[in-house]
Structures are given as structure tokens and as C-alpha cells.
Length: 133
Image 1 (cartoon, helix red, strand yellow):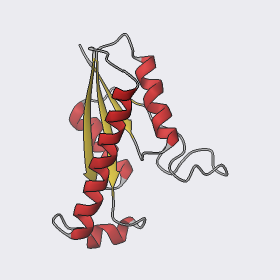
Image 2 (spheres, rainbow, N blue to C red):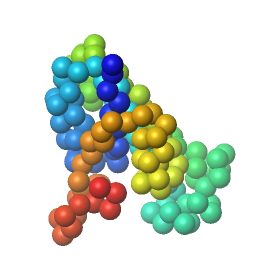
Image 3 (cartoon, one colour):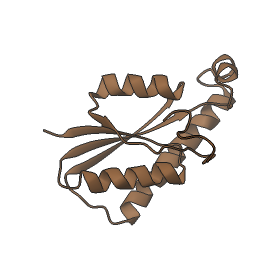
């Protein structure tokens, strides 16, 4: 039976290191790795919810950026010559609050474990964990 593992990413170095850690940790297991990027139009989620309707320029631009970012992550995995036949990678982009999106994916995909970096894009050192972690 394949493991279902969620790898949320904001495309930061910490998120990349978490992905590498998961690949190494589960190198002998058959796994579905769900690479998740949650996008929004602005840093203020309320503004994003109000102004980001599917089809709007802001929404479509943010979605395209998220899809491009996930494609780059997949390329980086391939570039590292990660050719484990037991590993399957499924990219997911969604518009939502990160915690809500993670909760939804965990339920939908029967996720067993989440592997994520503790600091995001800002890499703030004055807090123990990032806002999502």
C-alpha cells in the first residue's frame, strides 16, 4: 500500500529542504507525494477572498505563478536524478487559507503525514515556527 504524504511548499529554501528530507526518509517506501501550494492575491487573506474570483486577472495570475512554481519544484526533483519508481508526485494548487487548504487535502487524499519547513519565505528568526507551521 502506498503512503500518502503531503508536502506543502511556499517555494522557500526551508520548504525545499523539507521535501528533500521526506524523499530521503521514505526512499524505500512506495509513496504518493502531494506537493501543495496555496496561493492568494495579497498577503491579506480577507482582501484576497473579496477580490479574487476565479477568472479575475488577480486570481489567474496568482494561480499561474503557483503552477509555475510547482513545475520548477518537480524539475528540481528530477534534476537531482530522483528516479525512484516507488515515488509518485502529484502537484496541487489551490486558493484558500493555508491551514484550511491543508486540512481539506488531508481529508480528500487520506494523508498520513505532513512534512513541511518550519519557516517560510520570510525565514523570520524571531519566531520558533512560521505562521502556517
